[in-house]
Length: 128
Image (tube, rainbow, N blue to C red; front, side, top):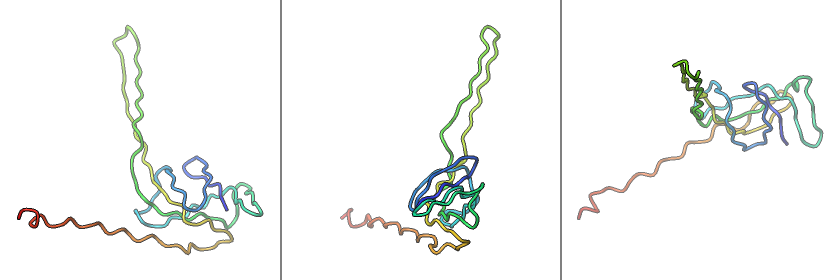
């Protein structure tokens, strides 16, 4: 099953376990957010929205908030001793699609547990 969602003025085709970068969405890292603008639900019997599919949502886990690549806008007017340089970095949220839901269903998959970091071995044994 797949879905076409709209967020941040862009459309994405998603399936469960997809990882995608979208414009910034409110939500803490590790929490589950629901994306409500579902344009198409695909599968055995596809459903097209007019403009959205009623009762359909996509549940996604927030993996990270970060900034996109640097975009530099440089303008120079020759022989005028005039130039302008501006930079910009987009705010991005990294999502993992957990479920595609229809008929006003609630998400059944909760946030995944965080992995425990491996502790370093004590350095005292190596000094002997």
